[in-house]
Amino acid sequence: MKQSLKLSDITALGFMLFAFFLGAGNIIFPPLAGQLAGENVLPAMFGFLLTAVGLPLVTIIAIAVAGGSWQKLTKDLPVKAATVMAVLIFIIIGPAFAAPRTGLVAYEMAVKPFFAHAEQLHLTIFSIAFFAIAMFFSWSQGKLIDVIGKVLTPVLFIGLIVLATAVFFFPQGEIIAAQGEYLTHPLQKGFLEGYNTMDTFGSLMFGVLIVDALRGKGITEHKPTAKYLTYAGLIAAVGLAFVYVSLFYLGATSSSIAAGADNGGVILSQYVQALFGSYGQIVLTVIVLLACLTTAIGLISACSDYFSSLTKITYKQWVIINGVACAFVANVGLAQLIALSVPVLFALYPVAIALVVLTFLRSKLPNPRLAYRAVLLVSLVFALIDAVKVAGVDVSVFNALPLFDMGMGWLLPTFAAMVCMFFVGRSNQPSLIEDAA
Image 1: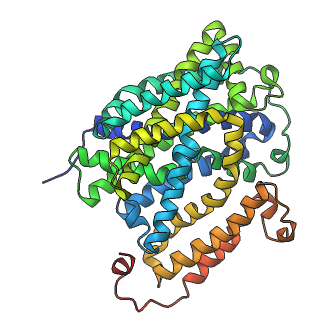
Image 2: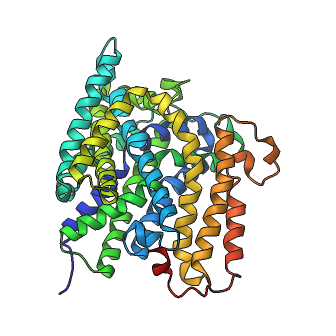
Image 3: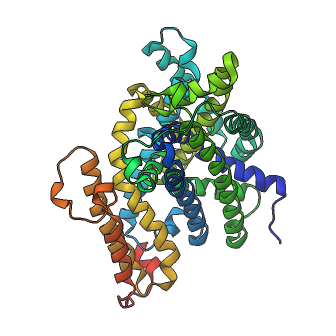
């Protein structure tokens, strides 16, 4: 039986993936990066697009190539190591950082401006309501593609098109000189800023959700699953690139109305109000609430699906656990949450990148099992050094490492380890899959 989808279903699938990605970090980081990059906005934006669009897309394709699941993606790793890595990623994109951040950004940008004197109680009430709604939509996992891809995302995309059009036709200021690290190495700085979106982590998990959605539409064979997963990734990547380019340009032309802003949320809020006047906050509220809500739904669904596969607790019970945890963590505060997440991202992002690259090289490697274990170990060790540095610990003894001053000391050692693995003989083990079982 031929397995195929209608164009409307393919589009909805891509929109759903786009909505999962487009959340808090995607909205708050580009405007500030654009303002600080100033005249160097193009190389900074390109670096950001590499990690915030390119890597997530390549990761989605890697999942398709590997067979559509985390287990197949990591079959050359020890089962326990692969499970620990997956659990850590799910905790980061779930209740610890990314998911609570969606609620925090939604409150800070879409709700707080309507209060003359915002208090902690307002955040508490909002976070409870926000994640209750996210849990409601996450409850029926099989209906995600219809609810998000065909209803919520089109409304969100229309709002983004209105904003982007206004930004390009009516910029609110001149582009000024670059500041800080964007003055000396804007490309590398933009590359590292893309980590903050956490979308490469998200890709590792959202890809599985897309596979589940495809199965719900009757697509079960590997070849059509890989094809439609890739199509969804391409649609999502185009949408994300459109959003990032407009937000970077927004930030680059914001100096006259949001000079000295310490976060992208403030820049975006003041820019939108300058563009649309008294209706600006309403436009922004719709965009931010929908963007953050769809991402929260995707994150809670992905985490609940994975954790239910590891435990006897059901998917719906995990939805409640994750939703309550997100509402609790959201009350920590946005600045504190971002500060806590950065060292963790520096530690795990290089490992995720190395895993994705190895997926494409696997068929060429003489000993995939050894290659995966050695390369990921090297990337983790050097990434931990970068992470410790970001956390404020003095690790000047490693300053001689190439690119260490840019937060990318892991890159060359990891690349060197990959090259070495092409000269390692084939394993005598009869079956990698049996070994990993």
